[in-house]
Amino acid sequence: MAQPMERRSESRRKVLLRAKASGVGETQAIDCVIQDASFSGCCLISDDVDKLPQEISLAISGFEETFIARVVWRKGDMAGVEFVRDETAAHVRGTAQPSAEPAQTPAPETGV
Image 1 (cartoon, rainbow, N blue to C red):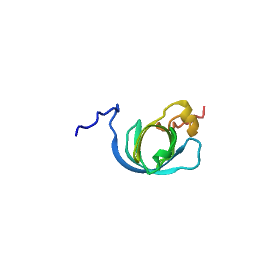
Image 2 (image 1 turned 120 degrees about the horizontal axis):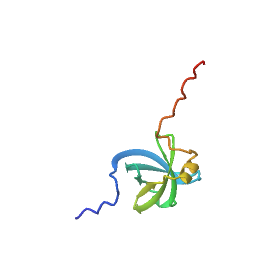
Image 3 (image 1 turned 120 degrees about the vertical axis):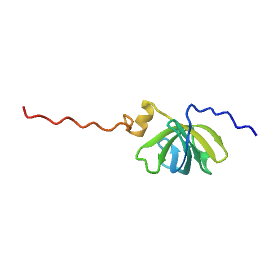
């Protein structure tokens, strides 16, 4: 059987992370497992992926930030999601800037 053609622009790494997914702004979440991930998206596994809306909020165990993502495919108990990276998503998450860069410490004042 031939392998399906890879359509992602970057490879994903195998991971097993617990997460909770919900509609953006909703409080009821489903438990899921992230099977693989890349900088741009991940694959979720849950018996309830069919209950997820197109745009989701993804809280990953061990991460402080909640990620906004868009469901791009579903098959059985799996769903592929693409992380949303724009000002609207940052606003929904409550962060104006991604937290990837360390905070800058102000230079000490000199007594002149």
